[in-house]
Length: 608
Image 1 (cartoon, rainbow, N blue to C red):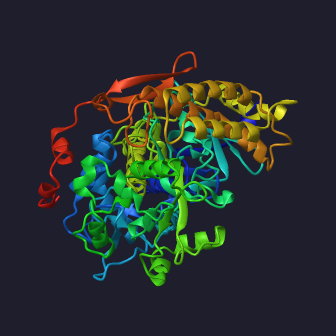
Image 2: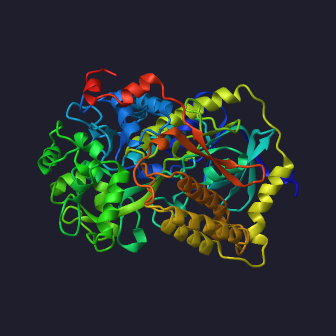
Image 3: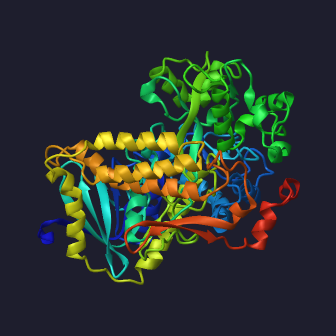
């Protein structure tokens, strides 16, 4: 194979992924004067960012002036069960308000308070109304704004282009091999730095809110290049995905429904979440029906209702109700806002949800409850990065957004994902700029590039082999049944055994026809990253012998003090095998520990 005949494109920085984190990183690079390229597996802005419907969390204090960055930081650390990277949570809480105001300057149209300020709503785990929102279409508005701003910055956007693997020169990034999904032709990007913003790997499960693109591409490519993965046992099952009809099972139902007053009911009509309030949260949540009613009626001094506890708590509660025979007809719970709010209010505040249920399930949410249940939604773990620069352990490789680890700890608070991608997308761009200005372009190794291409075309050249769709379905069933919301050592060990079996099938998959317009071939390629993602999650889940945040072990109930002392790190050993270690966590900075463990009244009196 003559590499010189393959299309080659040069950039100072290449951003992989064109959701909110990727576009924000690309904008920053371009504004700093770098020749910036961005590749998108699908179309520009076709990203999970759009599913973040409820809002962007930022302590702006527009609705409740007691809010400040310290309280947001405290909420984030407590929601993450104190396993967050302290510096990342600090940077996020401090910088989020500026990133939201910046979006407004770039043209984002947010809902307004009577005083004309950006409106903010309540959300699970947040002490105060903190989510800047646009109805229930906030992610869509953020993507629209970033796209409009991006196209005027001279960023080369390569759509429907899938990254295959990084090319290294003496251990540092020199480029990336990809292919055009339309033609099946390969392309080599020569670049000094790569920023991964590839999202999570939810398509390894059967029931997920993730769309087809989310196959753990960044995790797989980073792992094969030698980067470290961290805390992948923490997978968030959003408590409210659609449960019916089967064609849309798992589709997200925004937490904004509960934020606007919706309540969860079992098949007896009971508001069951009051039974599941963790004792340590009781002082900060509504502990009586009367208290919750005050909140629903708009009393800002009322405590949060139990429906807005952290997502792990709500998801487990729904699962428990179903297991004990109190679930909805299709294995979930009822989410009722129809009896709590007027129809006009619902249509104004939750227009997307109204149309989603009307069109997909023939349910009018202004008149009847929705059927909802847990759906794999988000990865708290991912590629290990430096908090200030977003640099990985591979020189020249950066990561931001959902594919990176550290910000959310053991459980992400709703709304923190949109402000996360804004804050760390910008920081990744700055980190890449500072790296690029001190290095020269690395040499493209023809042997490496040839190996990547031959591995990609292998499924097309086999005379027979398993169908890639059948293999992916096998993997999804394994992960859903054995590495789901509730886990055990026996199930995780069985999952790892099944994953080893599936690996052998992946090595033999056959994709029919030519590479042009060939979704079967695309699926075969995706399997290489899905299997890395699945194995990493299962290994990390087996290693963490406690229940914390999004990781629940039925054989190790409750949090253990030892669990706060380490992070689970995975990387490739010299023999190409996945290896795991528990890396001790550093003592948190005193000024941040004081904030995280402070009484809320003390922080309310501070001006931030």
